Image: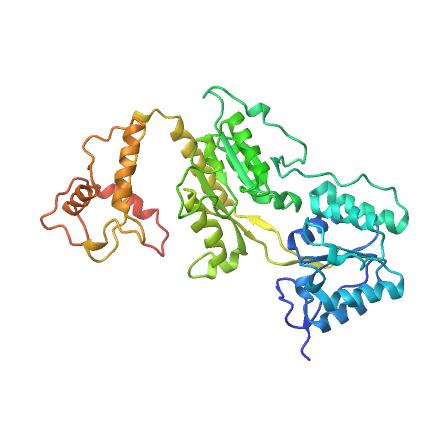
Length: 468
């Protein structure tokens, strides 16, 4: 049988037998969540106590992998915490073997659900009493630096009689995030005039708070502050969660953000329903879509299409239904690194400085534009001009782009923009476009706009060499 060795930079799917190459440790935590493994690794780096080993259940799908891990690592543990998503059947062979090992050797064992929902199918597998299991579960469910540290302290309490830490501190479904970890409130941001610095709301998933994997959020905040904006970072469980939505609405009403940067995926609206606005629109400000990509940067750079299908669906296609303005991917998953303290691979989000800066600059531009009087704004409406025939002017698959452009012009007129001379119908708009330069050439066309050669050369020189 061919046996793989776990190593840095390698992502394993569990289908092949693998040796995780972990030495024994006092505490072993097995979980299918990369974010949880990363969070516990960070908590361990900030604490001391019994030795800790972390392992992903995604790497232990093969029976031989389980047998090898039991013999090399689990058999020598004093406490095993097993997080199972999907009930006892999710990892049946491994569960049975771990339970037999713990009972046979007197090892403390907690078998707890892999999410926040109780799972009666796991009752009876643990050797620890239910109150102790529930205490361990609560620390992991709530997450965050304090609770992850509390989890390790409680493990030390169970093993060595160390002081018992406070119970898990609940993390609300939504709230304001501050990099220092201190509680913050929106009071400094509440304003009634436009003389205060522009406020930029950043909305991101609570799961990043739980795993304290917030480097992209921290980078966005720093970049926005550098450009004179006041960041308002808000974590949420989901935009569809009522409590989270009400929290966002309340904070928006108090802080009145000039721009919103959305770092969550999916959509609240339905493509086949009437659009009445989503919670992020309650600020009355533009909403930029920033992407925390689920792939690593090298894969993205080498791909002909860029982001993977999952990221495109979750972070581009679906948010467009809510009317989001796409910026770009600002962070990528880091390469798998092996943490020597816990002897496990750790994956985290890593921000890309130039892409963070681009998004922050875009947000600052939108915020400045919002504060200009309507009469001073210069708006350009850009329609596609696909080659090679005029039949593809203003083309959009599944969309009536000319009709949408007319509706946009009408909305702008109602908002006070000067749209004098604008076409009144889709047919009139298309006639206007065909009268000017198109793919059919210049002969007989009306030239209304030109670009001097010096400006052209300046723009051309700014292009990357391979594009020129």
